Amino acid sequence: MASKYMLIADDVLDVTPGAKKRSELVRECGLNLAEKLKSPVRVLYVQNPIDITLKTADRERIKSTLEKVREQNKKVQVIEAFGNPVDEIFRLETSSPAPGMVVMGTAGKKGIERFFLGSVAEEVVRNAVVPVMVIGPKVEKASTGKGKILVATDLTANSRRAEAYAKKLAKALNAEVVLIYSTIETLRVADQYAAASGTAFMDQSTIDTLKAKSKEAMLKKTKLFKAAGVRCTFKLDDNQPTSQAAITNETANGTYQYLVMGTHGRSAFVKAFLGSTARETIMGSSVPTIVIRSHNK
Image (cartoon, rainbow, N blue to C red; front, top):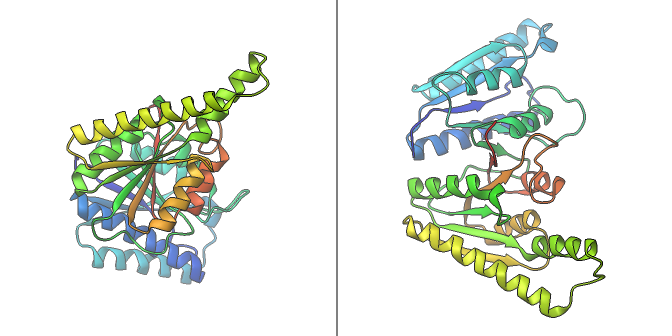
């Protein structure tokens, strides 16, 4: 995997216990993966114009925090900017050299929130060309060891870029990949087609056939990963949507380093699989979630 630099978007302004811990964890997760990938790191702090009236004590504290980051990580470049956080992230994302990944945290709050409390993370995830690793509110520590990578797929072209990235990441980390998919997705689409054609319901034979086709598709994907030299298995879930199954699986298993998933992007926040449930995946995952847009801009 190419050693493009990793851009860690960090908010050091909010010093409430929870926010401070989240900020430290975002840096820890980003630096942890960067070390594994041997990637250079840049830490970005943007002073939002709404905070222009910062007290001298707050400015000194921010300066001290950034200096601490520099001292602890001599190879890390700290970038300070003034303006809109989203604009600054995308400015760096489209500049040369471009980052290979953006790392940021979110508390998953709704409404118009200040810097990196939700709205910024959502907009970046929707529009970023490069993968975005989001440290959600349930993540408590950086991934360590040689755990597996869980990949949520929808068996369509929308997941191809996410699957391709997971393949490269797994090879770089010498990690095993576990693909997960819910047959509920297939049955839901089939049911919609049946209703449109005037069929009131699907019989059990049709349901069994569709489930068999889903298993066949997963087997093919597994073979493609193995052909690339990546250990790979798969899981099918018949009880809940893919995004929810991913949370349940990685929480119960406890051996995953990262959760990788795709997103359609622009229309609404993380419009993948069943739309808002993908957002719930990020909010509910206990490991860092790496989101990849299904299509470039």
